[in-house]
Length: 329
Image: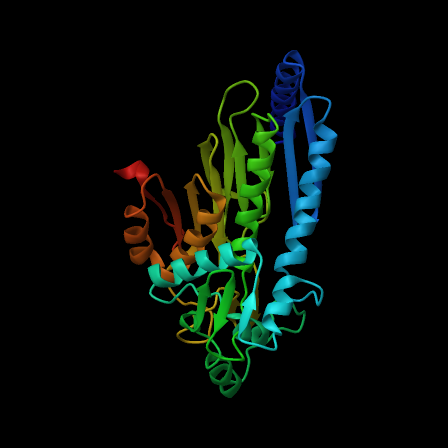
């Protein structure tokens, strides 16, 4: 077994050297950085010339700016101000308006399952706490009364709320939006090969330096981070994954995960453990992956078949892997 591991490491090292040499022959080298944003570890790597360090610094500045805009808990963020407004008409930035508009679009497409006003329920369940527990039924019902994206409207540069207690949570869309923005910036600066990984959102820029596609591993639900259920080869596309294994706790022998069903107030209970969406936009992939997880296998298959240029990999609770969408047409 040790010999096999050594052989694999040697092969990977050889591939890395070939990639680096290919990049250097074109006057470019690899720039890579790993850090913490959006409550997860992110990594950005790309091939560029001497200005690569400046490009990387700007990508990190973009992440900081997105957190200042979209954080729901930072009292200095724009979204915090929106949620703690004194009037129900609030002028917002283009960024807030764009993601709210996308959230309302998928609220309609999902039949109300994808709901950006889920914040009161998310706060109640508090999956980030080490002492997370199932809330009291009465508190769940009370929080449900505050949920409903049909109470949010866009009027020009303003968001209009029908109720004072409606709060927006754009966390299901922010990483996809950030990845798309970083890719747009880097390609605009001449970057033709790179990989942006925002923890569940993997976005590729072009192909590898040698011209081959990027191999992206699909994590095995409830497995270790290095255990894969499948591998997909992509070029200039995104792979966005969601699953009930990402954040959860166990109580009385039952797992409670962070994907909440606004219709019940509880974690969605269906036949999907994980879903990965392959498409061109990481923002769309974010919205689609969460929507599919909420719809269940049959609903997700039907949803993805209706989207042009989109593929899906569904992992059921029985560990069956289902490929659906563009590749099966």
